[in-house]
Amino acid sequence: MSETSIENNDTSAKLSFQQKVQAWWKGYDPVEYAQYLKSKHEEHREELEAMELSQPLPEKSLPESEQSSDYLDFLDDSAQGEEIWSLERIETGQLIWGSGYHEPNCLSAMTEAIDMLALNDKQHILHLGCGLGEFDRNLATDIGLKITSLDLCKSLVDSHLAATMMEGLDSQITIKQWNSDSDNALPGNFDHAIVEGYLYSQDNKIHILEQLHSSLTANGMVLALGPCVRDKTVIGDQDYVAWAHERGDFPQLISCEDLETLFTDTGFKVNYHRNISNFYKTLIHTAWLGIKDVMHQIKEDPQKAPFLPMIISAGEFWARTTRMLDDGKLSMQLYVLSRTDRTD
Picture 1 (tube, one colour):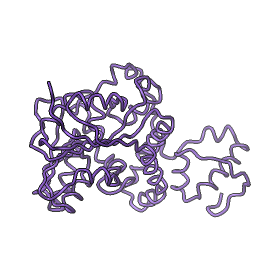
Picture 2 (picture 1 turned 180 degrees about the vertical axis):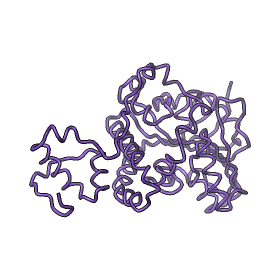
Picture 3 (picture 1 turned 60 degrees about the vertical axis):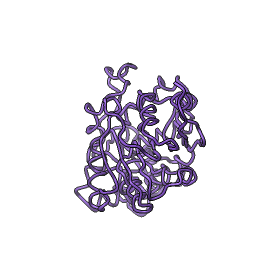
Picture 4 (picture 1 turned 45 degrees about the horizontal axis):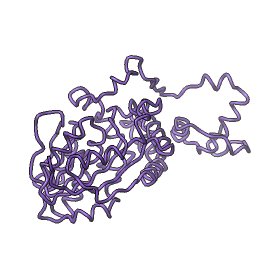
């Protein structure tokens, strides 16, 4: 097979994500490679079925010991924080989503919601679930405010701290690991808060929201962004279990209706709500359109070659995420909340 021409007129041949990566890695056009595989499949069916990737991936089936609902209970950070976001996985995430981001960057595009917070350089805000912190560093640079950045995962916190110190922003941004299961209350008296996936993925949502309520000033507002499930039945769905396993932290998601009830019960009023699932899918699609450039970077730097299996695993996870968003099993929800006086 030449790299420039593969004889086949059937344009309906399709590639799996692994085969696309294999095509790009070998320097072939993915469409032509699909046509080639289809023709070879017809000629040598048994041979093709035995063919494996040059760097085969381990099977990702869920172990029997991990299939019970009890196993999906939240595992604390001491057990898996470093394991979930290893330095290699962090670097892989940044290759896909851009420097300073380990997942899709929704927040920067939510200008209408961010404007509702009326941020200024006199304020001190909390970012719960800060990740690698690029959004916080941009806010600190552009607006000049102070930020306390908290995340459950130590490796994300350490990476955020290193980048923040390198940019000379450590006097504006305080970065800490925070486990909501611990006895430590949220620090500070914040003007506003940004809460990303942290709240959505934890089981003790009421405890987190109560602490958040206590940590805000009287006029404090919260921008909350993260995933929800359609209803409780999704949690037992085979697709959801596989998705949670691939994600690694086994998130404890609830429906947006149940989440809104928790907001009200813990002293918050919903001022703004938007389902941003379509936008989230666009971010995923756009990032993976650029996967060929990522593969080129890996090929040019032999030290990045071990990232190939992780790129493939990430592709499988985000393909599943997109499919579940399409099916309505998952959704990405954005809220802006105002703090109200609690009656209890």
